[in-house]
Length: 337
Image (cartoon, rainbow, N blue to C red):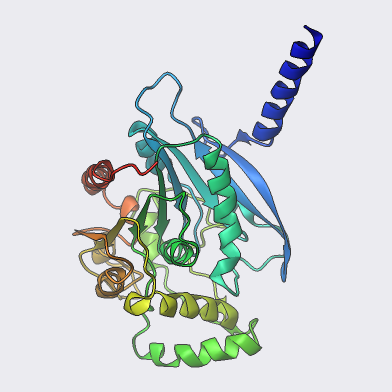
């Protein structure tokens, strides 16, 4: 009898250890977060942050789990995205990558990296946490640079725990006009002098299309998602360039179903205009379509006319239709586990 009590106590303590560290997130409404120590790199100690909202135990029909990876100059701030996942039977997880959002630490250069592989442990940590729940299906979703990171991650690791990849306007090519010709030179320079600063320009048009105080409907922390995109480094350019090239011409060979989503048009004007509220103000949608189709043998494309660069920040009516199409696609995928 005493042995049973001791064993029960040990199981209880182990459960506490697994769940230790979760605390209410800034989003409230059932969202939780926990920080993951990722050791140290060239910027000093680094952490990632996992955010989650779980399907209530009282709700039947849990299908799986979804992990969302944000883009450059970004963090997870859209509870509607998570709520939709939970409503469709998916435990929702997001990760704020090292040096982004909730994971920023004093003295760090925001958003810096020298290889996109630096983010693989951040994704792995979240997938390990997801795996504790033994989900039937795991969906990996990435937006913009997060789309590039998640595609690169799957091409490099072919992680068998991931069943589907959803890409929301992935950053598969530059949108720099004639300046793209010098990207290989900057990439080469970035190997030797990674801290060389590269200006990003002064436009605030995209943020104006999002922020409720300007021409959008969203509120977020502008010290984590800056109104003007932060300057980058030659090392960052090299990291992006290297990953993009590795995914070209069928080299990616991602063998799980991929949903590739992008706006119907791009807008390149530096000053805000009404077009910025119905087009991609960051990337060339033709490049997304062209290179996205090369990622694997099973790529489904959705062109979202009127969509913003982050499609899930578009107008409410458009978002509603896009959610319906995405979850219909996910429902059509055979569960492998």
